[in-house]
Image (tube, rainbow, N blue to C red):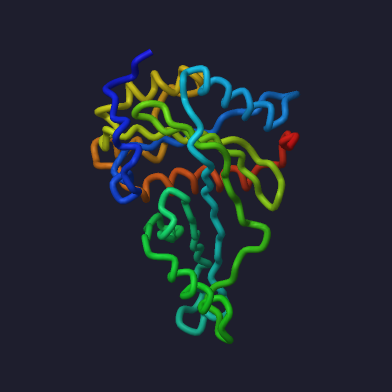
Length: 236
């Protein structure tokens, strides 16, 4: 089945160029009675039947820091506790994403983590790392023509939490210009769970896509998974 013009030459471009493409991230349900690994294996078989080929592994991780209220009050009485989420994506290995609880996203190089380390380990630490909050989605990465597919198992402190599927369409940067094509392609192996764009993108459907939009989607899913109890642990 042909899902559009072949832009296979884009596959050899570095991440500087590949940032300007369209990504969608969806949670895939794990049916009762099945393990996470069984569902991951099934999804992998589906994309391989479509003709996708393996192209390495990927991971997206997130650590959360909270402001130290005791030190905040030196400057602001009754200051509300603030959160900072630090995310990494193997598609941008030299970049560190910092998302505030206000939604503001800062893209910096990995040296930003040294700055955060100073804020958390100095005598007057303004932030502290939330223990047991590190969460990660990792798994197999596939290529199929103009598409990249990433099927990730999400784990929180070694506990399996769910499955995230990320689909990247290289030739397009505006969601409204390619949503029908993306939807048709994703439904070919994910079924009817893909009916509408991810919630985060609904108000950005006419604006150019940016790498920060990907990590924002992951963060929304990570926060939802953090609220759930562990489910079917992968069998391997």
